[in-house]
Image (cartoon, rainbow, N blue to C red; front, side, top):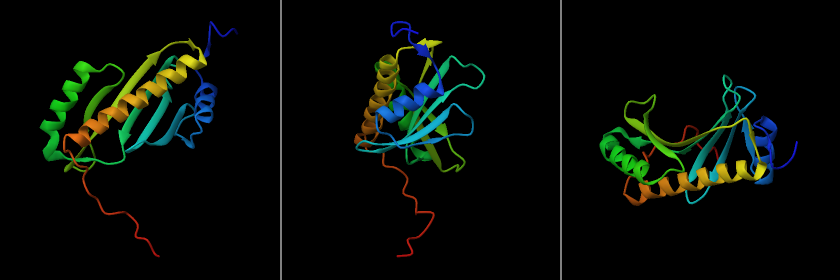
Length: 157
């Protein structure tokens, strides 16, 4: 396998990327699913996955560590639609949650490729995380505060 041809899209490629970036990561429900937390100016949850059904499809999905009030849906949708018209690194999506009073926003990008060079893969992931960070920074700058939720566990001291 030569560098110009690249290597197969695989869990080894994802793990090499995560180790190269010094990321502490977790494995998901199936073999080709990984999670890590990016601490930019916001705490972001990053999900990396090779589709179990289509081994040549890689998806990165980034979401903030918080939800928004459902009453902000219209305003969020307007900002997300404007973002999607101007930015092509990630697609922003407003989605529901199990709590009808809260909604989420995610940034997503997919890649369909049998083989890829490591540097190209790393650039793809880095650019998606960077764009998602910019998106969520814009939401914060627009005055869309996250829903304040009490911690699930209290600090016992």
